[in-house]
Image 1 (spheres, rainbow, N blue to C red):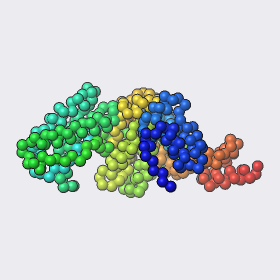
Image 2: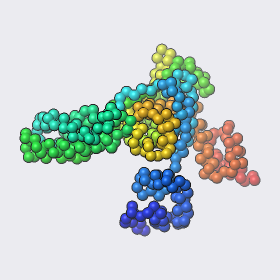
Image 3: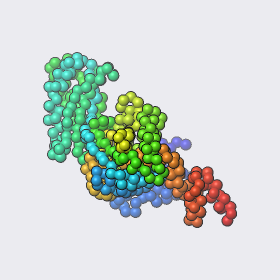
Image 4: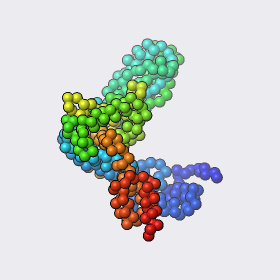
Length: 440
């Protein structure tokens, strides 16, 4: 069947839905009803959501949960988390409670430098290009003054611009490598606007540079774009306590637990197969807060995973040690976040989340997000090195299984009572429900 369509974007929202329902569903009215059931009843709110992206037909909901009791630098936070995975919020909250009585989390922003690049080709004399760049460098700043004015008033702006010779990687390949401070905005639009002006200045000035031959003046700009790899936009999150203070339920021997915990991180540091899953658990916490606060979790993911492989091998993002009877657990990660611009002022639940966090600056949000990732990793490693990950995870997953089986309220009570002392698996829950129903 040919489902190609012309002019789809010009159709009304209602017509888009009707077209999709008629082309892809055996019961079009049922498909239409499903999509409309997820519309916001407030027309203004729905219109706001419709305008976030193109070709909107409905809303795709994720649960918004909260993890309370986070003590970060002496300030108590309840952290919003938007995520679909069972046990993530519970694990974060459990870690927060654990460390709230052991000194809390410490977090420090180490740097806030962001990066953008103009990628261009030049096949002439590199010494001439270097001389040309040094001569015109001030113009990159002066010709972007209208773009940078407001950012400079807030204390940010362009930090530096370098010419980088990358011809050893690709013949004729050079970069304008620029660094920025975008204060409380993530800064993508600001950076990209500056870069496009750099490219324009570069080409115009090259045509007028007397030392260039005709061939050398034909600089080819390939693209101008920010980088989501920000190794100098770093935040550190950490916890520490005396080894004996780690004792609690399931940690009867704190010294043994601490040593096993450190060993688990050492394994994730040297074994990429383990490191990927180890770091995915960290991102469970980070992504959930990034999403809840209206930031770009894909950019954050890409930058952090690149950082985990910065020495040529993918490794654990977290570290731990035991020294002089003190257990220490920490992480340094790159995070480019914003608390102004984008969805932060448009999405009602993003505004709610940021208000609940005390309307943090971008640097404060960096600390909160990093701590959420560290807490998530601590919870995962505590489970892995004690009771195992599945016991707690599958009990949290029990609700999803019961929903799939359309369990009644009475069946749910019976299931929960039975599985308090039994291992939860999808097959075992199905079997129990079937037996329950067959005895009625």
